[in-house]
Image (spheres, rainbow, N blue to C red):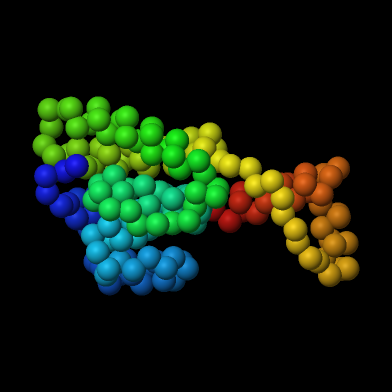
Length: 170
């Protein structure tokens, strides 16, 4: 744990009101006025979105940053998408190495923040969970459109549709 509390402004200086407005405009529900943990989570969601993460990745990223920098958890409910225990283990291992460095504590906070971000930016697919079943009711016309999506099975069609959406809505 860090000896003192550090504000997210050591990464980027954005006013709390502006951060709250940005998050609201982008459909995040983090209450940045609640406590330091939620401020770090909200800032990380903002940072992640600005750097190209999708909203689910931003939620998980924010939760991890809040936990490892403040020691308090700001829940994200993203453990259904990612194996967050494995992510936490990886971060904890690196945090020990960062804490052993001969640099100012504030720099250790920055290094930890950017390390956590690197996991989400460069290798999160290694931590994704598969959802075993998904049931969707469609109208006849929606089903007809869905069946025209490339793929041999409904599962393949859905994955192709989802991949297309994610590629075009970053």
